[in-house]
Image (cartoon, rainbow over all chains, first blue to last red):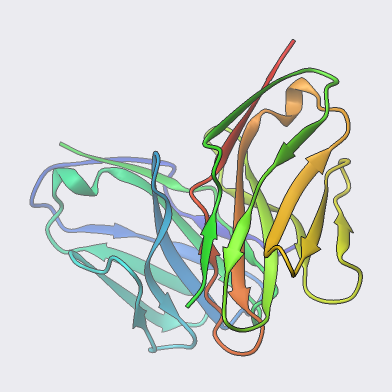
Length: 111
Length: 114
């Protein structure tokens, strides 16, 4: 089975900190995605990547950046964390568009 | 562009009763359709998918969904639910011909009561 691992289940950070969320997949998938999940809003796409060093903005990229230096790793960066970035962050990977495999999520609280 | 509508934010149901979670989509191109389940404090898991072929697809735990192109729907059904089915269910769509992005609905919380 494909496994997508997010490095932290829970994080608490201070306003203004630079935050790194890490995601690693083990099935050589080209495509990787970062979503945030908020009650009543469902999943919203932040950034995605179709290949190493390639990235595209999703629906809500403001305040975020990403890095994909290796195929298996896709990092989400909060340049200067703010309280409105408190959320559940979900990473996913896929082969073509036959469905995603998700990580367990990182619940980030910014205080 | 594609969009997905899950009209019911929450569906309460008694154990062993049947349930239907509704999903409608909008798309100008042919699509793939998916249902994901999220148990508390976990990520999303793929429950079932429609890519092509038979319009009725089934999961290993008794759920089924039927692709209805004329009604642009992909409703999820189970004839008899268990307490353990309590979770949030997300419908998703992606275009079948190009991009890989899934568009998700806002989710339906299935609350099974004893």
